[in-house]
Image (tube, helix red, strand yellow):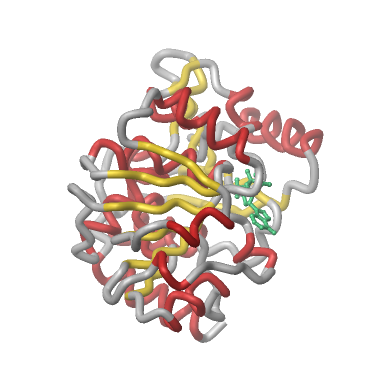
Length: 278
Ligand code: ATR
């Protein structure tokens, strides 16, 4: 039996957990695969690697930061969730229809992780930090779960306006500056989608946006606790990082590429231990 070839493109990619996750799914489901992580230091390299990948008869790729938006250009057809979020994290080589199909599994990944963690969105007051690719890729799935209100906060307010118009959600969504947060009531769920955690920069958040048992979820994850989650602990929130989302989005991508839905329960423990011992 020949190996199914797929890989992830991103920068930085050295510590990517995706090869471990996909190899685990492959083993557990008797799918023989080879999954590689490729460091893509610029867009020219991305095109070159993509052409090579097409030549070697791969089944598809994952795309991660910072190319999720740019990868839209490589797709000939986009899923609804990719179109609305303007983001692609999975490119599938659809041989039957002879086209490249672009999709994003990030939003589904977050919602499945919320389900696992028993975090409810229905009628909840939500605050989103950031208005970049990460927030765009989860917004539709959050909206589908019927929140009461979503506030979006960003340094560049124009980006918030553009999101609210694109998703056509003026009735439940509003935006403000970080400074305006000092006048806001507490939120049930606060999600960090800024790139601050990756850059390890500091973030300032007013105490009043937290209440006891607010959920603080960082879309990023790292071995060390992120600055956002540090603040959340100080204000007594329940904290979660994005490692669970990573596993769940990978499971959805595995399903799209192999038509098999992998079980994830045991993998959450395994990957957490692995990250802690990195
Ligand atoms: P990603 O695809 O990871 O979301 P991005 O599209 O570059 O990356 O978006 C990064 C987000 O982090 C943006 O919302 C950005 O704010 P701006 O749109 O105002 O640039 C936010 N961000 C990055 N550095 C920040 C900082 N020092 N303080 C606050 N927000 C920051």
